Length: 350
Image 1 (cartoon, helix red, strand yellow):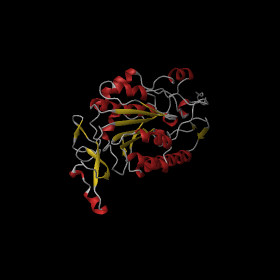
Image 2 (image 1 turned 135 degrees about the vertical axis):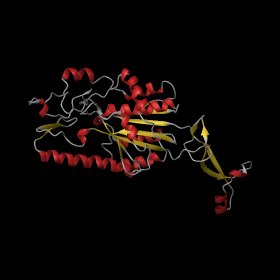
Image 3 (image 1 turned 60 degrees about the vertical axis):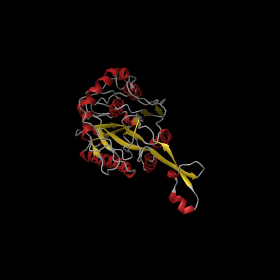
Image 4 (image 1 turned 180 degrees about the horizontal axis):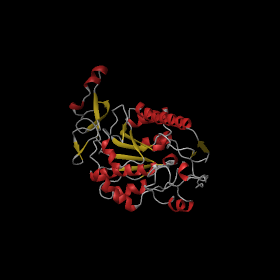
């Protein structure tokens, strides 16, 4: 980790520390020494004790209504609803009629068009299942107040894992870095802890030996065949590299799954602290930019807001209404989100 710029006083300097492990940091100011940082960067971003304590916070969050418009009232696997419309069976295709096929399954409309008898074939509806996707790529390993964006993403992912465990819903955890890593399906007791082992993996700073991050588009492309039809997919990321192709990937993903997108943001990604002079450092190349005037701060603010709005617009173009969550926000703000589904057009803010 590079050394803090030695221009006193410290409070007039701000450096974009992307990889500090931060705990209750004085906003904008506190810097870690290299020795302290070295001791923490290879530790899990959430300790076992923190994972256990989070369950107490989760219990205080108002119940979330995750609307899935594909869910029918047909019951499977006990009290769980089928993720498909109908009577518990999903239409698959029509095939030529064969002796012994049930008359009630004849496709009369197709028969009227072709003059030939066809039988409708169905497949059993799948058990409800969730997929929790957490982005831990390099831009998520950044934080200026309280915690890293990656840590907040893991805390939120834990909440959905905790909900799935309470409801005995099968859930798969997916972690995005330079590649895609996933857990086997987890169900019931102990599933929360197993998922959090993946979501709490260390997020050390990038260096010359660090493999480059995979693009969001490539990762979504890899994720698509792993998603079961009817799944509920929770995407937690800053979506920093979302573009028109991302929109196409998300639309394809929605053909198989309902999607909730939570967009993690840091306060400095909207506006810089009102102090000058101020120094910014890029995340990997360590280029330094000095902001010395109010006009430069305003120019950054304008650019940052346009960039964040472009991300939200990309998600909305895919039919997804993103929920924005600040990296320093308490988890109970999730309960203020008016929806956790994909039909609304305006973004929610938590």
